[in-house]
Length: 269
Image 1 (cartoon, helix red, strand yellow):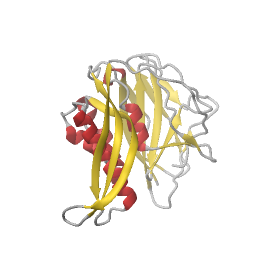
Image 2 (tube, helix red, strand yellow):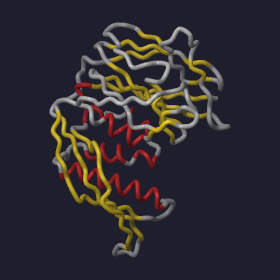
Image 3 (tube, one colour):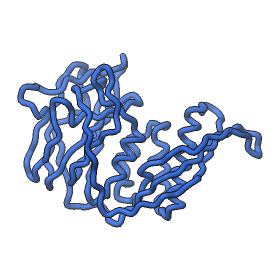
Image 4 (cartoon, helix red, strand yellow):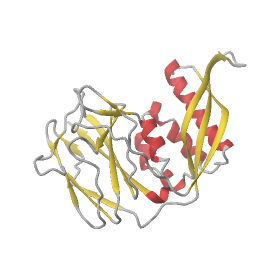
C-alpha cells in the first residue's frame, strides 16, 4: 500500500521508564555467504547475530530464540511471527541502538566465505513486565479490500494512551499515524475513537503497489507516555519511510509496562 495519507516530521523525545542501560563493546557476529544468501543479506544477518551476542554479554540469557527471531526477521520477511508470537511478554531487554565498528570478510576452516560484523551496542534491560490491564480493542479492519476501497476502523483503550501506527508491505515500512492531517493526541480510557479522525475524510483509500494481491500489515503501538516515532525519511510522495529494524529498536526501547502493541494483516486485491 503506497500510502494512506501525507505526513510531517516530529522532533520530540520520549521517556522510557523502569530500565537499566548496559553498554557492550566489540561484539562480533558472523554469517557464511552460501546458497542464495547475498552479501547484503549476510551483512544484515551478521549484525543480527552480533545483536544477539550483545544481549548475552549484557546478561539477557532467557528466551534467546525469541531475540534471534526478532533480529533476523528483516531478511526472512517473518513480520507475522515476530508480532504474533509471545515474545512481547518474554523479552526482558533489547538492543536500543548500536554502531558498526567494522565489517570483515574471510574464509572459515571449511573454506566457506563469511562476513563478520563487529558492533558496539547499548542494551536496555527491563525491570517490569507487561501490564495486563492495559489493552485496546481495535475493530473495523477487514481481512481483504478491493483496490481503491476505503478503510475505516476504531480503537477503544482501557487506559489513557498515545498511538503510533506502522504499515508493513512488500518489504517496505512506513509510519502512517500521526501525520500531517491527523496529529498525535491523547486517547482517553473507554472512549471509542474512529479513524479517520477528521470528519472531512470518508475513509482511507487503500491502493496496492503490485499487480498481484498485496499483503499489508498494520502495527498499532499504544503507549502510556507520549513517545513519538521520529526515525523516518519523508519521500517525494509524502510517505514517512522507515525500516522494520528501526521500528523494532524503538518499540523495544519502551518498557513493557508502558506499551501494548497489536498486529493486524489484510490483503488488497
